[in-house]
Length: 149
Image (cartoon, rainbow, N blue to C red; front, side, top):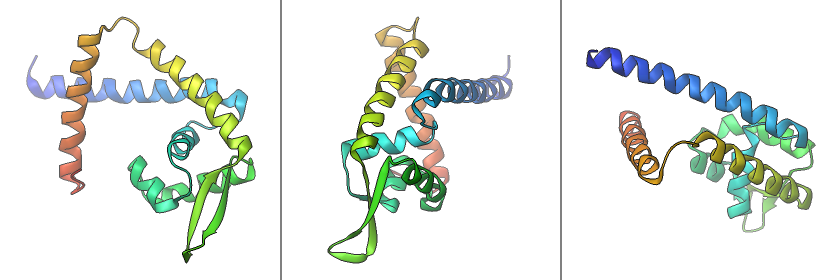
């Protein structure tokens, strides 16, 4: 098979994997009231609370505007709260509520199970190689978009 066809097949497979992962994540997280896109926000806030929307966006490699609706929904669900930064009144800080922390821990356990299920059949060396290959692809895309890390 020629290189272009192999690359097209890989990209198609990659898209199918993303779609399947998203569908599975939705099914697993829905019972605790979490949407798949909310879990990464919760995990970022578990590591470091009191982040601005811009800081969360940077850590998740998304635009800050992309988070607006999601953060509003999370606030309505009682997962997060927003408050003005005492040192700079123009900044709004986001943090998990105590309810949000409990739900985030449940979501983390669910995601850990999903991850272990997804990688069944791959040994440590294969996981290491897969990680290296995906890192190369990610860096290539970052360079194309001027977002070198």
